[in-house]
Length: 74
Image (cartoon, rainbow, N blue to C red; front, top):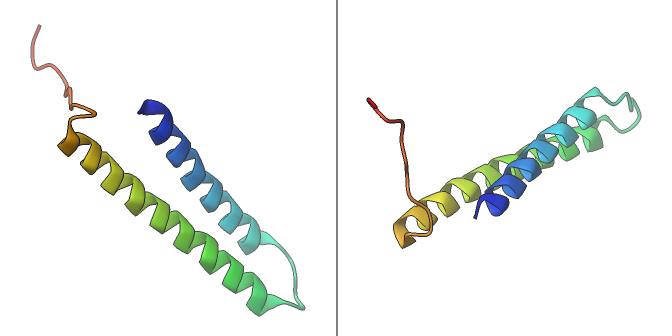
């Protein structure tokens, strides 16, 4: 379960990095294409983040993971 969550977080970071690359690229001829690619990468990042959040909630509901919290005192 930890591996799935870690892979999903890496995919979110990869989508964010690709949006940054599209934003910083200097393609003057295809400015509209660059904006569309950047918007698509950011939309993928948001979609992956929402899917990961829902997957964590489903995992908790099904009992696959349990919250541990921070111990108050020892």
